[in-house]
Length: 207
Image 1: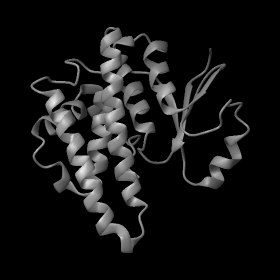
Image 2 (image 1 turned 90 degrees about the vertical axis):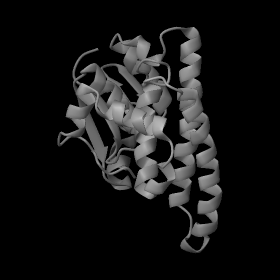
Image 3 (image 1 turned 45 degrees about the horizontal axis):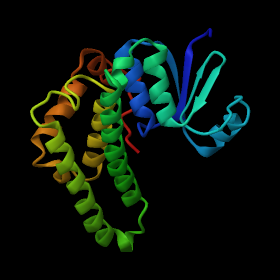
């Protein structure tokens, strides 16, 4: 495998942001290609040699992957940081569990942005109930730990993304979850993540 790693995704944070955070945290040099519209993506979609053309994609020499969770699993193993997936078999299952809950929240918030204006208020009430229930579960699971498993994993980076997604829609929705708020700040202030977020390479647009 030769050449610089290439990550392709939309020109937003989205689900690709977890991959970016992992690469930044590990200090991996990569090209971050952000597609601005469907037309740009369609020019590349079937010309990159991807088995399952989709975004995000990761090209690492002869290795070409799509599906975000496959890439999230690949990069820590490829770059010798497997503990980011969980330090043992059971922790890997726990991290996946947290990832699933956070994914549900992220999906609920995204679907809310797609609702017709006349249906928004009714959908918002339903969505907020679901999201707050799961935030409560996560707050309890986190407890007094600094990170979800007591040490940094990809699940913590996903929390930062989800937290900022929620805040972009309604900051009041995250009020009262002091543990999760502190965790979000803790991840954002990790040395390499903080430097990345302060750089021009960081995509501030959530959606």
